[in-house]
Image 1 (spheres, rainbow, N blue to C red):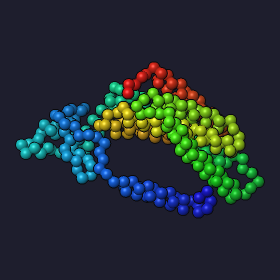
Image 2: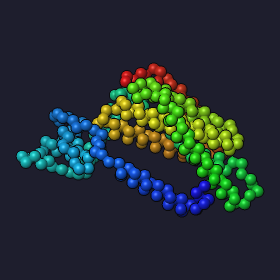
Image 3: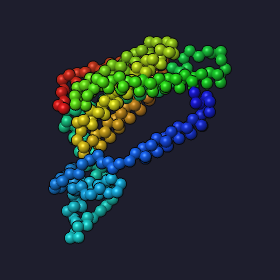
Image 4: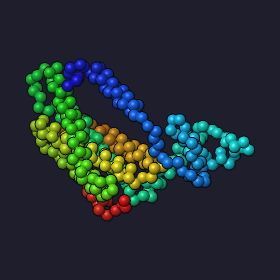
Length: 306
């Protein structure tokens, strides 16, 4: 709607202002926070890097030292001044922490939880591409180009509004049925969210009226929102404090990669293969059904202790 009222350039300006307002609200949050508790004890070697005991917190909330290459610690002089090489040091830190994070996930029975968002993004990733196609359905071919464009923009805005409605309502409806002290309740809602996405995508492949397209869009987005929140809660519940950052980084990186692939595949199936939006939605529903079965088997036979 905003595009019809103020034009595309002003919409981008308003979008930018909203980010600035959000950043300002975050900046106003007061308090001293740290995600990782300081560890005491001797040195610990991680993939060729020695873990230096945490020093006092700096003014910006970070610790003075985390990892240093073993060779640097061994070459310290009498004045306790390590030989530093910024590029080499950063490379050692990155490699050591990355490998340690991957090995950490591989060693845990809940490690596959980092794939929950990845699987969900395979389903909802193409939604934005499909929304453009659905917004153009049912328009009168006799209207002039300007009228058609404005109607399509309004419909696209309505579709994204229903995406937001689904993302808002889904977690609220699911919250009474989840408990952080019972991981199986979070797993159950993640499984139900895949069912919701599969149902929503199948509905999009079958309905014709724009109203029902909006309803099915909300059903699909409700599922994607539930799995996004509850999968994050599962990782926060089981990951240790000093590994949570790396675990969440892997989680979000895989989700972003999967979403990009899904969006690209959805566009190619329409442009290169000639599929309709309904056909692509049906493929998304099949993907949702497959992930539903896979995670159902995993949740049934792999029990993670609270």
